[in-house]
Length: 137
Image 1 (cartoon, rainbow, N blue to C red):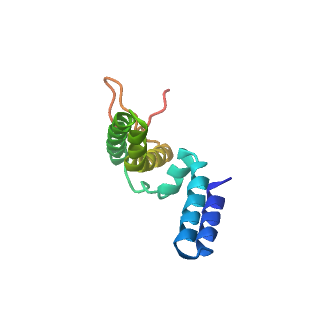
Image 2: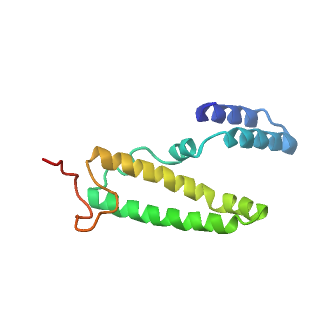
Image 3: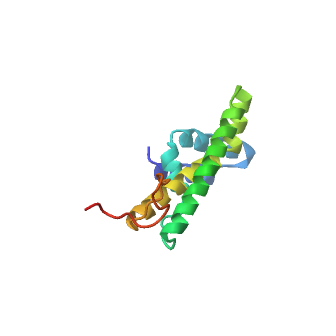
């Protein structure tokens, strides 16, 4: 099932509920349907399209490095919390939403960098950190 269909079903389930029991049922249905969604589709849903369109190559590079550093921090926090089942639950509830959003932002950064012909990957030794990608001749 696609993400849009899940959203419609969740919306319809919320419209039909009466009282607390109905709301709990609607939340349960939405949770079960959203569990089927992949992280990539959730990441695309959480990020505004063309968010980085006005950024130049240097800003794209700096934002990508900052995003990547925060992703590594969150991965470490999720791994640290995941030592037992309670920790996994807390890690997923506390850190996973931000992690998925950052993955979506990184995808958007890569897309925008490709459109602007910018290199946002970490530079190799002796190469400039930012700027347009120059074709080899």
